[in-house]
Amino acid sequence: MTESGARPSNFIRKIIDADLASGKHSEVHTRFPPEPNGYLHIGHAKSIVLNFGIAEDYQGTCNLRFDDTNPLKESLEYVSAIKDDVRWLGYEWSGEPRYSSSYFDALHGFAIELIEKGLAYVDFSSQDDIRAMRGTLTAPGQNSPYRDTPVQDNLDAFARMTAGEYKEGECSLRAKIDMASPFMCMRDPVIYRIRHVHHHQTGDKWCVYPMYDFTHCISDALEGITHSLCTLEFQDNRRLYDWVLDNISIDCHPQQIEFSRLNLEYTVMSKRKLNELVTEQHVAGWDDPRMPTIAGLRRRGYTPAAIREFAHRIGVTKMDNMVEMGVLESCIRDDLNTNAPRAMAVLEPVRVVIENYPENQHEMLVAPNHPNDESLGSRQVPFSGVLYIEREDFREEANKKFKRLVLGKEVRLRNAYVIKAERVEKDEAGEIQTIYCSYDADTLGQDPADGRKVKGVIHWVSVPHALPAEIRLYDRLFQVPNPGAAETLAESLNPESLVVVEGYVEPSLADAEPGKGIQFERVGYFCRDSKDGTENTLVFNRTVGLRDSWAKMEAQDA
Ligand code: ATP
Ligand code: MG
Image (cartoon, rainbow, N blue to C red; front, side, top):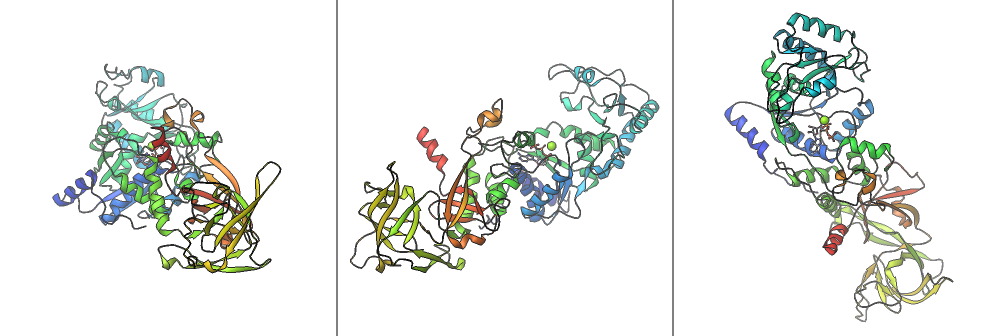
């Protein structure tokens, strides 16, 4: 796919342009700061394309930083999956990946600096008391009885906290700001808490861990970030971001800029909810092809280019909204329509016997891999007198609108001959077992000589050559546009989000490359699964249909 060349500007790029023009910055330095507590999802892709894309376009740099201050929920599995996903999307971070945890010494030092300046204190109030004294949006909070502890006592208490002399929850370090601030985040926020747990990077070195708001701004500053892009829910927290940097001895003061997060219809986006889908086994794992994770989309057959294009199409604003799933789907459909080679597969087969085709004979026909792009070449497709076609492509009777095979009428077999249905054989239940046909040997690659018009074209595979395949028809995981709003995720699941059929594919697909898109002609876009199946068994995942069938249904409902 040709991605839209010049990136559309947005309010963040305008701020950067102005900063470069005024000389505030001579280069741009961004970062992508995931917390390694889950797999990345399509919302993260928006942030990745924004941060890495800006660095690319302004010849700046972008760091990958693991924001790992909560060891309870984090793991190395996530760290490594996140690196894979960012690279797969087509980006490379500057230098080594960073870890907030590698700044723990520096952060601890800055905490002591705040204590020394009388701007932080150790609070022995219980968490419940701290919460109760925070006040509300309309009422100011109350000062803690520990707020005016002398500096030296605070230094001692923090040292003992750090040495592991207190239990979890027994005390915490709070910034001393303003208990009457209209911004709740400024009412003496906790900046350090006790956690007697092992950390995946720092092991057992620490039992006090810095909070996100304290860590993030300092990490940004230590890395020389110029523009710190985050989602809108951190708008208020910008006050705290700036307060911390204004009150410690550090030269760099990045600018935090907020943009609206991606919300996508028919799915959920928070890692907590995605985790729930995995642990409650509603899906087969973080990379289940129905998950909105990068790993799931990749296994489903999405390409990095389609995901980047999606990020460009939705743009970057400060307005919260819900993006239609159709927008994402049309990005991959456009990509695959241009780039995916074609092949034939029959999902719900019925047998066709061509009675005038020489018995036990077959021939190799040549089929173009793409109707409009010769550079994709061609392949050989075996043809014989016994074929499978789709059951729904045949009717004993039909009106003119049905441009497929009808008893007594002709249809073209894709890349092959014109056939005519002569009679059918049914089983006791009345289901058609075999359609007996005749073929016109003079119609390979040309219309019938006598000028008969044959309108319909159907796909097929040759029974003696076809390969059985498990075909997984994936659809949207949820059947309601906003499943996150429901009480439980389970109640909104689409019971038909995965339908498995046993079909047949043409033999050229024996060594289809996992993950690489193929159009099954007239059926949809698929890719070979990257996990299941073996050398000898084929499993294909449906990436997306040829057309937006949900849009059609929604129009009918309306
Ligand atoms: P979640 O709510 O899914 O757990 P998070 O914000 O806690 O997300 P982080 O790992 O902290 O996840 O996010 C890393 C970066 O990705 C942050 O800068 C965050 O703003 C951004 N991000 C996360 N979700 C979205 C989204 N839906 N749209 C855009 N950016 C997002
Ligand atoms: Mg977060």
